[in-house]
Image 1 (cartoon, rainbow, N blue to C red):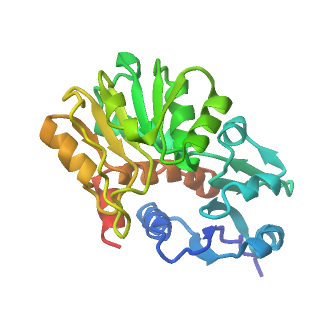
Image 2: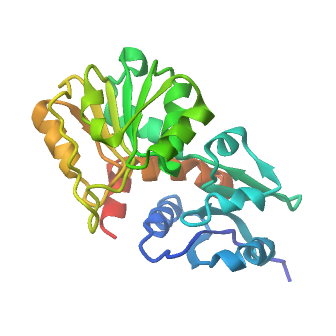
Length: 279
């Protein structure tokens, strides 16, 4: 009797996890490319995280996506942490290597840049300063990515000034921090504008930063994708800006993990977007 090859398993861990669109995305890719494998959402409490990481590779898992609240904690449990995950202070992608080691990476920044380049192909990072609203994990990934592609200055504002100051301490003099009350004033001559906060998301407070100083030449991105067109994007589009929704970042950050786990680099196109939006 011939021994059958083990079907690779991957998944996403967090708590809560039922809202995640990652299972729909990876499930679509597995079906699209005719691959054997499964992608499973798992609600794992913080107290069980170490045990889960020990057990899952034995059950046939080849890797995981990691979401709130585990993205920071996971760094202390991984055997290998990439430089960018260490700089950002969080990981969103795990690879369970054949030698038993857990490899942690962060693909959020790369996903953000890939989404910008796909939806705004004329975007030039060096064209002028960037404005980033927010100072959480997503902001850290965005800031690291913007610095890497050559944005000359990043103007940062967050509702908690201390968190913004902490980012400047970690990322250096390219960051200029302003109080949240100045969040609209720092838009003047900005070429790139990014909202990394939850403002404007379904169920959250509205985005109320005044956009009077926003140039119609700016590229404006909102990491929120529920709704797909946020109030910020609608207002920026009315001004004449090129706008970039947040769904593409979710798709692009997922692709490197899928490739490592299942062996094919998935294409990110309108059919992929439609499959995830139909969830």
